[in-house]
Length: 426
Image 1: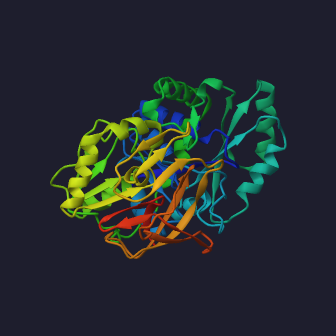
Image 2: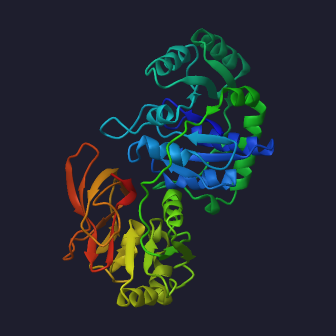
Image 3: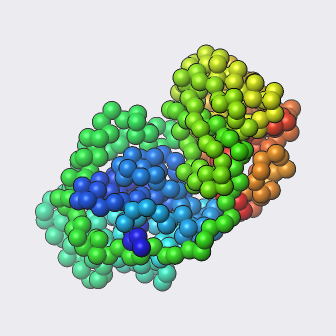
């Protein structure tokens, strides 16, 4: 049975992502088979974790997934499961659910708390004690202190934390070279970072030098068993062509696993390389990503666009999420104000024009050709807006509190898309 732990923090920006990468890499160097997972809907962190662990990284979303679904997805190859948290340990959706703490409780895994000690000393003890005692079903088993200034600073922190009874796992000094670059949707994808391997190597060395990995492994606990998972999202078709490249990179691994488990044949193609989808496909999926960064190339990809038109004419289901939805539209106007023609399969145009991101979980309802339950859970995260469309919307939407939101997307026959990223059935 696999053992695991959850890396969490009191707040975002504490260094848990870099530390998680370093621990995964260091554990692999020691010969352990490590599988990583990301709490919540973040595609980018999951992609980075997969690149470091060498195994697919699954998203475990305690807001959108049932506990038995979480436990089933947590089972898998590897002797160790390392779960990276999201935001602060108890931060969740607007309805107060879906936190890293909720996930740790569902999986019955211990929490390793990463605390940024910059500009504080003994006050770290009541902070950590407060998190450790907030919920009886969430066990904070160890603490790692980050951005420690001096040896004297470390001594003060360690002595203060002795009163909590929580295992001290180490203290990391400030290191600017451990930062990964960011863009408007978060961290950049690993293949886009020229020094990615250098950053990971530095993080692994820091974890090996400053973290008591032997004690960390001793704190790991068995991953809670779940019943055999049977409620999976149905495949979009029997033969599914999935766009996959730098413009279409946001794809949940659990969806692919669901579809393969139900006998679907999945193939990939690159719109940026002007490849057409498999002409035999009865479904085409355009995931989210960064089409706005590659809009000129996508506008020139006529073989790709022609393949979509041919698929529509033969009755294939064509589905786009967020960036994929934007590419199915008539045009995309980038941040510089340049308008690029898109595939024109949906009567909508999009523009990168939001001063603030549109972000949040969504409860979705539909009556479309999508072979999924009529009620779904998903989220949206984008800086673009779409023009009003004469086509029927794809989803009726509410937020996590159940408050009504504007209808989402567009649907023309068996071509459809929206800004929603679907996570699971409701």
